[in-house]
Image: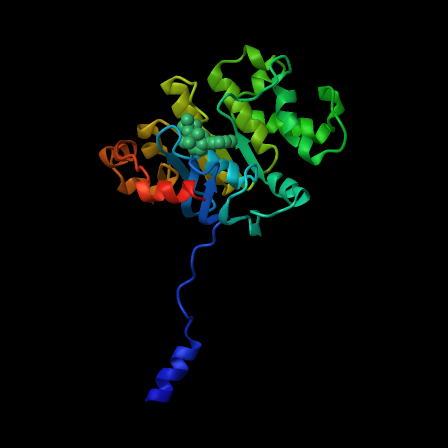
Length: 280
Ligand SMILES: Nc1ncnc2c1ncn2[C@@H]1O[C@H](COP(=O)(O)OP(=O)(O)OP(=O)(O)O)[C@@H](O)[C@H]1O
């Protein structure tokens, strides 16, 4: 009997497989100075095809978290894996190659205003092309075709030859999304992508990001200040307070009152902790 049990055990999988994360942080701390903590022991994993929204007060660490994921900042402690590669100590060449697989959407769009919409989208390919491109026609035809396809996808093909700075904010952000998509990223980071948009354009942009994450199986991590929008469109909420994760659950299981609590309890370090950090 016991040998039968043993042989069954030997054949059985040890335990159900853990989810595979495209982005994973383990105990990540970022200390900017003895008294300023950007991140405080953050552990979290992010799956492909899911939209995670980072919520938290200004200064809670949302941008710092995003900057650690694309290697713009390095942690003081902890491990960060992106697409199977550890990046906390990666060299410049390794970081450049991983960044080609990470799209970034900025709060203020970062478009070149006088340039055409189509050329702005083409600039998303600069990381993988050699040499400068000083005009639209200097991009390979295949890139221009691809840029047009991405513009169609975000509903702006008819604006391709217009100056980018003649578009509305919501339209400019959709161009920003097309520019990120032409990179064919596996991970899409967005830092307050709708901060300067009206509620209708905000919902359209977030809806677009969600649709694309499904279509492309993208790992999306997006910071937002709009709680209602976050609950409606995200799969998961990661709440931050003073650099610490205070909520990490499926959005469908969180109501507005609970989400708003992320903004109410501000964790302040104990006097002993402050003294300890000041002492180094
Ligand atoms: N380069 C830096 N040097 C020093 N301190 C920094 C730096 N970047 C961020 N911090 C500090 O780290 C903390 C987290 O800042 P962060 O910008 O990540 O917050 P946030 O949640 O993105 O805020 P917001 O919603 O206003 O964008 C803050 O105390 C901030 O002052």
